[in-house]
Image 1 (cartoon, helix red, strand yellow):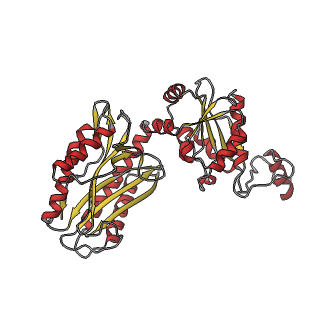
Image 2 (image 1 turned 90 degrees about the vertical axis):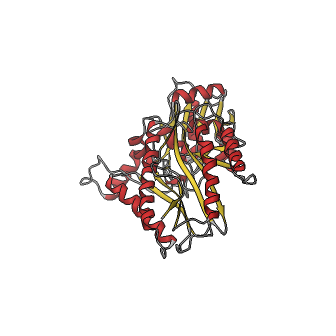
Amino acid sequence: MAHLDRTRASHRMELAGLDALLLLSPESFAYATGAPAGVATMWRRAGAVAAIVPTAPALPQAAVVTDLFEAAFRASSTITDLRINPIWVETGDLRGLDAAALSPEDLIKSASARQGRSAGFQRPETFDAANGFRLAAGLLAERGLETGRIGVEFDGLSVTDFRLLSTALPEAELIDASDLVRRLKMIKSAAEIGHLRTAVELAEAGIVTLRETIDPGVSRDELASAWEKGVRAEAARRNVQNLTGLWEYVSVGQNPWTKAGIVEPGDLIKVDVGCLIAGYTSDTGRTFVCGTPSALQARLFAALQTAYDAGLPLLGPGTAMSEVHRVTTGAMGKAGFPGYTRGHFGHGLGASLGSEEWPFLSQQSDVIIEPGMVLAFETPWYVDGVGGMIIENQLLITQDGHEIMNRLPSGLVSL
């Protein structure tokens, strides 16, 4: 399912003076087409695939897809105007041919002819980026856009690929649309929100299992394993078929960075975890202590809670992200720690490369919070000699405020 809102995209593209978007990253390709980009994008080089989104709603979208994933694309996307870019994997399609009447050699020859292979057809080492760009240029030309202002995500385009793309579109004006695409993606579709909701629910089921495992003598790795076991058990119970990944930053004891350690009485256990549903990642943080927290642990965590409680009410439509950062930082100062500094107190969630997606709740942000955003709001602190501490929840921004998607308590839990 494609998540691009064509009406909203056309409006923003028109305001930016663009004639079309040419989306080349695997994440943006899937976002616009609803289909997987395929294995040829594994090297993070552009040119294997492309999605064309004209500004004019009357002009249809189009795509360049790799031959190996053509069938998957047609099964997943509503886009029908395709150009096929061959990759290194040899394929064949014998369906509809009379295998009994033809020799194996003639059978394969007939299949190749039906695929439209020219004489001397050779597959590339991986994929031919220049060919992919030429195919995309042809689709733009068919829409009269080959001399237009074409928006491209410069953030994900190497210098080498930019030169190849410029050669394929010599008369077009290539415009950096990185920010525009980010702003389109920051408002989630109902399906995206559903993925993120399922992801956080699975992650919390894992946290429950981890919490029940905490005991003196238990290793960090055993806790991480318990979390994953809980996630997978919940996914099986609910018959979740699209769990595509898990990640965890669990720490035990006074060193918040090590992936080692054995639980001892008085230790902090920091749990920062996420699950991926169809590539969309959740993000949740909780802190536990084995036994009674020390006065120092309790004091530091109380300051984090004060800051979290100050920033949380601001997370609603119309608030500047920079204001959330200002108030949260100020609350830490008022709580007795004016030297506490953090670059951001949370971020968007989606199907980006890592667990954190633009935009960020930072001092530098110019983003105004809008309904439909899904954000992680967090107040962490990592103090060697004390341990890791974090409060982090996942929020859906609604028309009149926010909904916390998490259900587990977020305070310091003594076990």
